[in-house]
Picture (cartoon, one colour):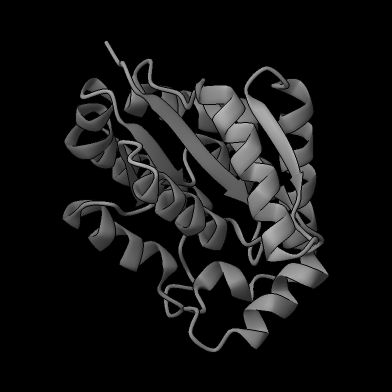
Amino acid sequence: MKKGKFIAFEGGEGSGKSTILEMIYNYFIENNVECIKTREPGGIKISEDIRKIILDKNNTQMDAKTEALLYAAARRQHLVEKVIKELEQGKIVLCDRFVYSSLVYQGYARGLGIEEIYNINKFAIDEYMPDLNIFFDVSPEVGLARINKNKDREVNRLDLEKMDFHYKVREGYIKLCEANKETFIKIDAEKSIDEVFESVKSKIIKFIK
């Protein structure tokens, strides 16, 4: 039975969630809060290997269902090998994406169906769901502009999708956020980094107390 807190950072491409996650992690470490940071797909070797396949810009022929199954497989291994163990030790797990990313990207934006993708992932994650999901809301134009400016960031297969796809991703997140208000917090991610960080920090601290 999990004792720690599982917090997922969600959002579209260029939303800034990864940057803020790093800042929150550093803040917790400086203040002696037991936590770890991880990401999906990835976090451990097997899942990182699957990540390379999913995000490879050359894999343009990948079927949407194949993509969904690869994400679920990476998620399962990451969960059992890393996340559960850390939660059972009472740590806060800060995760860059989790199951709602699949519901949005493959279920909604790719049109496979939110319920269908949830069923695939239900098999993969058992009863484990984030205690809190933080949705970084940003318009696709702003998010993709940030990616183009950041030369150090990897440009992956999803970044190269048409603008309509990114609009659907945002729309999907907003719908899920509205439908799961008890576990979702929506953040205006178009504000400055410092403003977003302070907003996220205050909400997480309030949640874990």
